[in-house]
Length: 513
Image 1: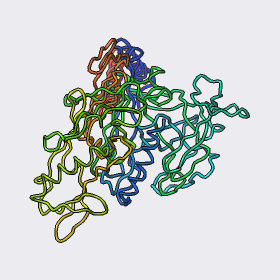
Image 2: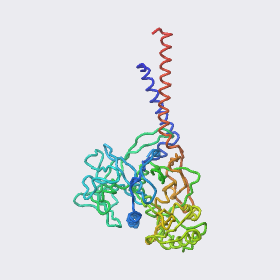
Image 3: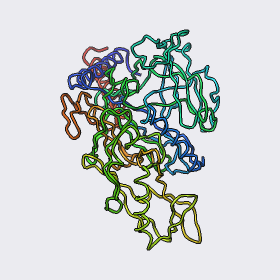
């Protein structure tokens, strides 16, 4: 035990250290002028042993696509999360958010294909009370939070035309293609997250945010086997979480994820830009609700498919969307047939093509890597996304003594090409709203990443031309941040103890006390 005076001295040293760190961060532009990044924990909904039929996944994805056609201190999850990228043992990624005062934790799906964060209200009708996914359901209640407030119809933040004259509440209704949906009203309350102050210090932060409180659900949302607390929209619109936090000066207008495809799944989600020299960028199509990119061509074994370029032109019902909430990959019908034909022509000498349940499959007696060709999607900005055979094929058992591998890219007769988790996994994906671009690079998502904290004031001029008006970059290694804090405190204690002991000895020798 340290003497009382020494303990006071030690506490003063520790306080001074924290103050110096904050001042240094301010002088370096890390607080105020620049924005801390954010950390959220990613998990997979379906346990590894939870089997999911492919047709069930396709039905869920198509329901999402109907919705698409309608109109945090940085850190990284460094422990394994339940899940798998196998299409037959996979669910969507989700994260945990804390809302209200006192804060309560909610499991919500990570969704770059929608904009609104909504969670289930305690008064919700036809809403599951338990979940078969191994997660505990929590229900939000405005009366239980001291910081909650309702959004009225006259509130400038009310972007809905569904207002009740009786309650004066800003309401919403979301409909899905499978006749499911949710209805509720908007509230404002605190959301909690960690904030990195510079390269090592981490602090808890909170901010008011507008989100939805679901009072009624229908269709598949009412099923207990897939029940979850809500959806975490990370789109570009004004009420998305990324837009609200950046407008409050809390996070930059860029976020990134790295979805781990093998093992237990999981991954990284940061409000900030993950840095990697291998990342290639492609511009976003301007004035689109979703993350729409300029797909220009598809190549199989290096040969461009004979597809009319007009198939990829973005319009009201066409285009290429990056959507973390979709499981599989969907190619527009006009591109799907040439894609299958090109693969079949290449592998026919070594694999026998068959049709299994309307799905193109191949009987293979050797490694698919030796037989099947690589595939590339080519985007504006000279950016390509490359796929290995294992990215577009799935092992469907054995037939006539040979392994049966089937193409799991799906045909989409809606005219959209949609890139889901199947090809987003095992890649860094950067959504740069400030510069209006998306970047990607192959990466082991169980490894540490560096994140850049930028001002978010970059302006998008036109496709291919970006002007940075005010940007400061502070790269840091996410898993080391909290470790550095502990090391700092450890050395303060060691040095403080030593100084106090030395001071005590000097007092005894010279003052005879």
